[in-house]
Length: 94
Length: 130
Image 1 (spheres, each protein chain N blue to C red):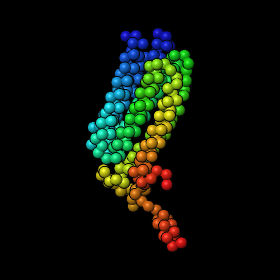
Image 2: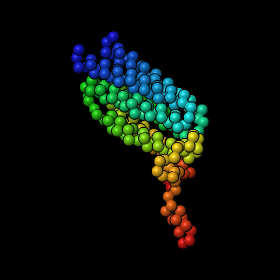
Image 3: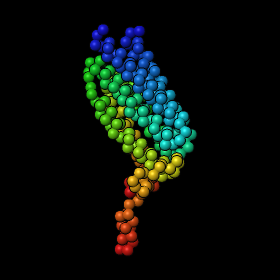
Image 4: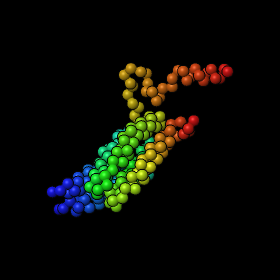
């Protein structure tokens, strides 16, 4: 097996694993049962989306996806903290 | 075997390790039984899984010719923020009492997140009098 063939197979496996991860964490989002679990599932989905964008960038050989993934990382963190804080204090910015 | 071939093999191996960790973490998120236990599994997705994918992206950019180390920024950001968001979710779990109460800390009366400091109460009383 040559290097580029292995690379193509690895890219397919990475796409499938990340998409499967997205589906499984969506299942946890639906099942719950607690709000903490739902926040955690949303956080994992954001991180999986980040990984999907990164693998798409490797697949297409384009550098521009770096900015996209940085933005996703920052928005994911802020939204997780905002959700947790809303559940803790009943307010996001007091 | 040229450097480009070795680099391509490295990208493939990084991709495989990363996707394996992502899958393991998400299966843990789905199959563990307790909210606090479930909190533990997806940290692997956030650190090693995405770390390896970023590593693959970096090595791939060097193999393709236009090397970039930008991905280190995302890695640093994720490594800093993952424990913070996990801590917030754990606080939510403790406050909503969805899991077993954590054991008492060895020295203090209670955990910091459940404890309202005395000065806060005094402040409230003073404000009420004023």
